[in-house]
Length: 321
Image (cartoon, rainbow, N blue to C red; front, side, top):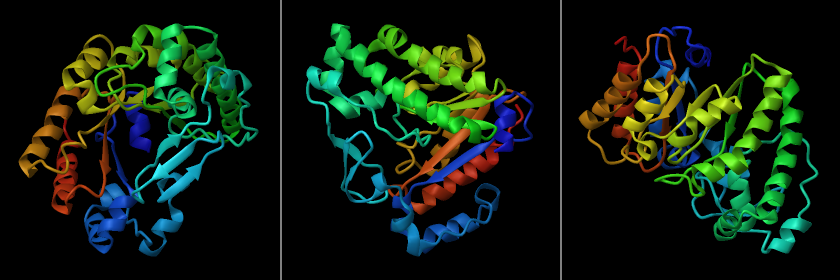
């Protein structure tokens, strides 16, 4: 964590920070074989020993096979234990129900992935929300106001127990762009993130804000910085390296923790994986920092490809230009 914080603050970290996440589905598939692989990379995993007998018990509710209902009464369905569920049951069916919607009573500081924009879709379904955004009427304003109100309570609850960095996650883009377009995003959702992150900065001006967001979001990355985000976690594939170079290095410097191309991981050769990591690092590296590498390993990646990815990031995290 300390090297990531140095990278965000542009304090010349010794190496490029690497964040690694192994999804429960990978542990369920590979078990002891995966543990042996992890043991070979103490620089990344710190000697972690996974209790394989407790993987199912320790998974979040939405990662378990079956149906899970969250605090908003959204119904999550999961057909594959160890991966995140998807919302199938949307509790708000009509415009009238938007106005009748009551925000949850809990004030425990929970800010799950998809806490703002995706929450709108989870509550009402994609088609309804897109129609209401297009109409730009009272319905979408009311829906956003209610979700924002709840999130402001939750952010306020978490403020006293923040570490040096607080993380948020909300997938704002599709594979090719923003579903509502950049201008509507700036009109309706940018003020929400400005208020939420402004609450954090008002409480502690030096607090670092990290935001994960999947999809093609390069158009609004400068807007997220204006809202108070100190480091963005964007996807390589959805945004394109050329766009990330232009927006985050040429037009201004935006610290990013780059999601390497996990869609490539299951199929690429070892040399292709090295080329991918090398291209990203060589294109985005700054001596001062501003770059991290984010790796997600799942059950669809062969163990030999996992090893190749780890070897590649081990090589390139020492890159000095």
